Image (cartoon, rainbow, N blue to C red; front, top):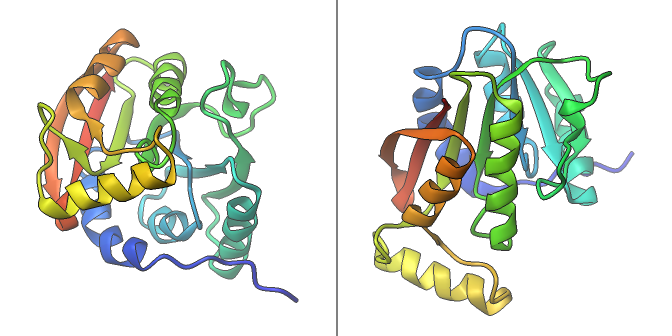
Length: 207
């Protein structure tokens, strides 16, 4: 049988510090929706360590959905839910359906998406979080960011140039623009924490 799992060295490097930060802020109950679960490696690592929370995976790309499915089969956990196909730019997500069985979603986690996709994905992420999260529900956002138009490291500047060479609509985002989009959707910025490899962990809370 074909093994469709994808492997990301960056995920293996960053998962411990992300989990350590996440665990200090996760809600006590409900479902964590991981938007853009990628390979699925974060999900199988995090889920067993955040029980009794449910961890809901999601992806837009079909190959990443396949990878996540195989990772879940390889490393199952009874609180880990198979991926749903999710386009964040849609005005209704699968977890908003009346028959969604893992409701309520009380937190959303998203790593390394908004810079490797058009700006509309950030708009969609914030709009979705604003619709779905209950009062005091939390959105966790991880990745590289610019502050006041300035990169935090030369490596991030080079990464930004590389992203734009792939697609002019990609790129490391200005945190001020992200904060503005969050505010439009009723999300208050709580913390910005530096992480390894010139990344940041941002926490937002639904007002």
